[in-house]
Amino acid sequence: MKTILLAIDHLSEEVRARIAALAPDYRLLVTRDAEAIRSAWDEVEIAGGDVGIERLLAMPRLRWYQQWGAGAEWIMEHPEAQQKDWVVTNASGLHAIPISEHILALLLAMARRLPEAVQAQQRHAWVRGGGLQAPVFELAGKTMVLIGVGAIGQRTARIASALEMRVIGVRRDPDRPVEGVARMVGPDQLDDVLPEADVVVLTVPLTPETQHMIGPRQLARMKPSACIINIGRGGTIDQEALIEALNSGQIAGAGLDVTDPEPLPADSPLWEARNALITGHYAGSTPVYQQRALDIFVDNLARYVAGQPLRNRLDLSLGIRIS
Image 1: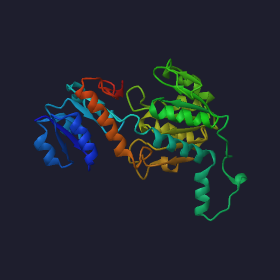
Image 2: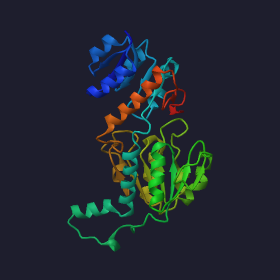
Image 3: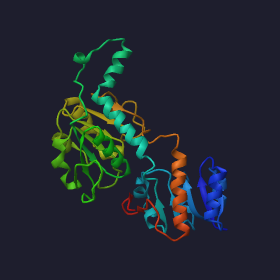
Image 4: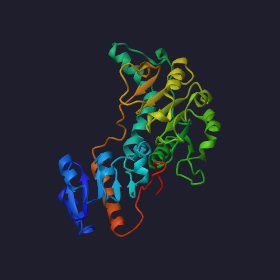
């Protein structure tokens, strides 16, 4: 019998009923158990959740996989995934609220020099503004260069605009306007707009096109007072060049939720880099993650059984979303 596999911990009766109503000809299997998955994978046509790459590639009848996250660099690391006759969709849009709020948290922390304040608190030292290593600054009137204007970038642009920041967006299709973005340019114009930035925010996935898109040349074009925030993938920034730029004062600071590699080794000099604020790749964490992922899956299931194009479909040759 045709099977839908959801490799998740729990599924409510309400969502089970929705799936059954949409796909009555399918058996629904909800499990993370490796043996249960192995015994069923000859029948799996639809899969979602944390299945595991090797298992996915071994399923002969699998035609659609709904991954629970947004990043899809694993496709580029497995050429056989690009040759498989299937559709892969991601959870793009799920992270827009928590990650845009995380970006704002990192930005405000750097603007108000909170890492230095926390260090002073640990020393029981009362440090007023004049005693900080660098002055605080206001976001209003500053320019953000936003690299990647998908769901996360769009919400970030609206928030930044509401804070009276000017947003310059960088995206593959610069002709598509976005609310909150004052000016949109293509990736080939990135070097041209970097000197205008007070803060650079990266939300892009890791692809051959974005690997080290911020390197020594780009960092050298930024203002000494500028900060950089990365919540996409660590490999989009040349980390050695970033460490040098921070320690030399070439740029003022960095807020990083992603590094290269991850976890960041305990002896990495990035931990001690000047004005670096590092969080452990949890920007997308939210208590409603599972609910939102299931909403995307159920919406796509309705499209699948109706023969309609799926939401968040990935280009298997590039590992990026195309719909």
